[in-house]
Image (cartoon, rainbow, N blue to C red):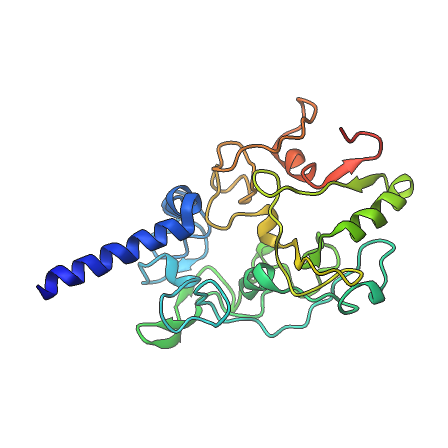
Length: 266
């Protein structure tokens, strides 16, 4: 009887995971095990950075127990770095929730590996205790090429800024000088607005652009070439509905989910 109950509990838990993760779980996470997927950091990974002995794949980012609070069962040690972040053109600190509008939400999770300050194998919980998984091919933290974004994010696309009508209006006014306006993303398949605690001009939608708006860390349609971009050819999410010229490729489509060249909006 006890074995039967145990089996039922496991089956129910597995179904819950599938319902929560949906398409990303069924099509995306499985992609981590494909040849060349750089987010497979286990010993089975084929990238230059991988574990010396650890066979589990999910453990580098997730744990079902003792996870960091308020995150999606997050396991990787969080960074405590302070980041340099540029404000959008023409935007002052008084319009943002803070002058630097520090990364939060999904972007903060990505930066726990990619700001180069925390060792890749440093996890919150593994076999009921915190530990650092032994890795090969890396310096103490990421430390390798473009995967190390550093703590100066001023040269990167803005993240953790609320995307609301006030921001769109401001960009519309600037359109003649900067060459583009903003569209309002409608969610998948175009671009995902994700939760943020930062606000713009006193907004209250609390959703904005995060790293995960453009990148799906679980799925790389053509491992090693598409940089985990959403909307890339062959990815689970289809292309944005805005029709670009035929010579533009998936990267352009993704940009056009939010950005519109002046006078070119439908």
